[in-house]
Image 1 (cartoon, one colour):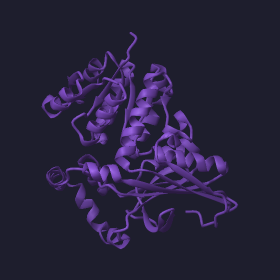
Image 2: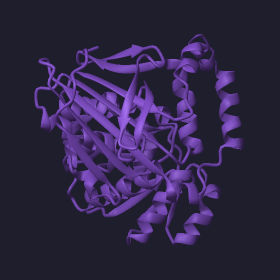
Image 3: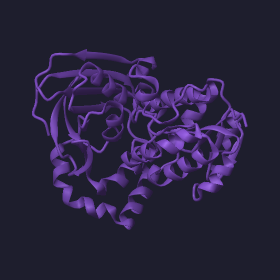
Image 4: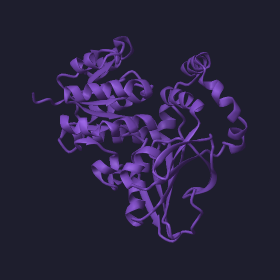
Length: 360
């Protein structure tokens, strides 16, 4: 069967709606899909798109719903629960898989399914949004500048706020602490394990380590065995995270999780149109080799949500055109380290002389 139809699953969500509108603006006519037609029927009518309703409980049923679908842009979290069933179904139905998560376990699951996906002839690409396109391309750029690097540090900051889905994902991850890549292995570390001053192009800010997707993906893009990712927010105080470490296990209790998620649903509408359109992101990266030689770079991009929309639809177009990988790949592996530079309002600067720091 020559399948050409794309699908956006999770079209009722904040980011899914934006991706659907951009896909239609570019001339695609995706199937809009989700668990409840009521939640996206108005959008489908507005965009004149076909609809499909199915849950993600059983991969064989999902595969049946994907029989005529060439590629899925999966936008329905929590991805910790929804990604693996959709991946399995995409392999079974020979449907390309993309998602917008930044969750380490989902990226690892994609990598583990590489051989099955390659045998099915499909691309398996979790994390094709802001998580992790710009940082993945930045990591690959730095690795090319210093091929024998043994340490990679990445950091980001930005404006615009969070969607409800992103906020829920953050709540889910809090009880699990942090993660870093240490000597080639994913290791659990305390929340805010390390703190450092980040020399963003817009000014120096304090950042703390977080369990960001690049701890998984950048390892496959670069082969660098030690990877740390830092988040910086001008209003954030690292000492507050340190003081709250003892509370983290309590956040894993089901009742607490449900309360926090209900609170998010009621109180977190997502960034306004104006905030989203005006948002910007700043990234910084550094690699170092065993001799202490180092290279740094900064990257300026659109804000997280505008960039996620553009990168996701661009990757969707590429896999539909047969330009995607076979099997698992990160964005930089699939489309090269300069992929991020094809996005508007993006600027990269490399600094080859940087002072060495101690390895973790």
